[in-house]
Amino acid sequence: MTQRAAIEPFIAMEVAREASLRAAAGESIVRFDVGQPHWGAPAAALAAAEKAMRSEALGYTEGLGAMVLRREIAAMYAREHGLDIDPARIVITTGASGAFTLAFLALFDTAARVVIASPGYPPYRHILKALGMEAVIVEADVADGLQLTTTLLQQAGTFDGALVASPANPTGAMLSRDDLAGLCAAMRVAGKPLISDEIYHGLTYATPATTALAFDDDVIVVNSFSKYWAMTGWRVGWIVAPPRLVKSIERLAQNLTVAPPTISQVAALGALTAKQECEERRALYAENRALLLKELPGLGLPPVVTPGGAFYVLADVAAHTDDSMAFSRRLLAEAGVAVTPGVDFCATRGRGWARLAYCRPGAEIEVGIARLALLARG
Ligand SMILES: Cc1ncc(COP(=O)(O)O)c(C=O)c1O
Image (cartoon, rainbow, N blue to C red; front, side):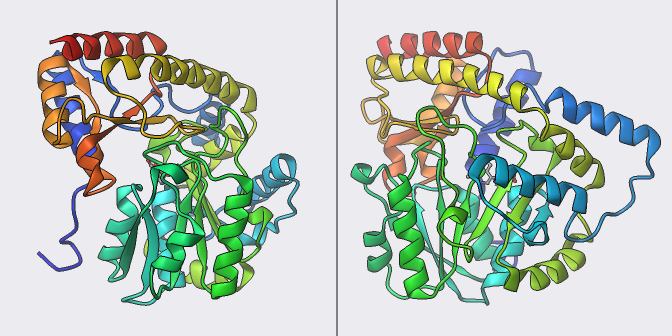
């Protein structure tokens, strides 16, 4: 195996594989594991894709993506955030995942050091490593909602950039407007790029999320149709890049993937008209979230921080185990409940944590809680 390929697995996906195998074999499995809405793309996205399949050749789009979609995303920033973003700065990608590869390659050379808070989404550090870059992991404090802070940045030593996500995975924790502004300012002073992963924007339950673009035009924003629009398998996302980076991202995109999938871009265009459907779904996540926040403490699984957004609760499992990986295996095998062990997100403290995703039907969440209750009693 090459050194580049010698990266850790994305444990959430491994748990998902095991859970899917068991479900396919006829076992009843409650899926608190993958952050994947079960209902799929909004109706308007499906209708747009169906029409295009019958009437269009669906050849390559431009490497940067279809201009019509880039324009509509820009219009959304105007509508939702009051921001005037030039569509030329918007790059359509194969999900947020494809966006990270393009952004990291456009921003950093090999051996670059990129600051990331732990706990965090595992592929950040794994993609950086595969690209010959270094994730500088800083341990975030529970008192700071397990988010990156300017103090942690100061403690990180020399670095070439930083990445932040709000709402975050695995915690659902959000940065306040002031804290995000503070991070943007600190990075501007340091003269280093900040990547803001905004994939859970739209999925908030108290205060709406602020885009880093509100504070700084030089940030690199990553977003995706996977979560709010429930289009995980369509693999379509975007970057808002500073103008100086667009040319290099275009070259990378043309060469690495030629263009993002055309049918998915058509569907995404449809999805942008589906606000009502997406909001109805968000209301259901809000009910699931409330139920979990009410029940989990009584099961000895209290949330580590209060989730303001996304569709995750990071639960403290220390009352049950000091090995979240073994705990997750046991839950799956004995209770038919799939959760993601915290070690996926934080190698150290994650042994005492597990992540529960609540983007499934409420009835399934209730069954999951009942099974966890049996386990807690037994
Ligand atoms: C924080 C975060 N960023 C990025 C991604 C990747 O999303 P996509 O499906 O758009 O590649 C995920 C997926 O779970 C995520 O949680």
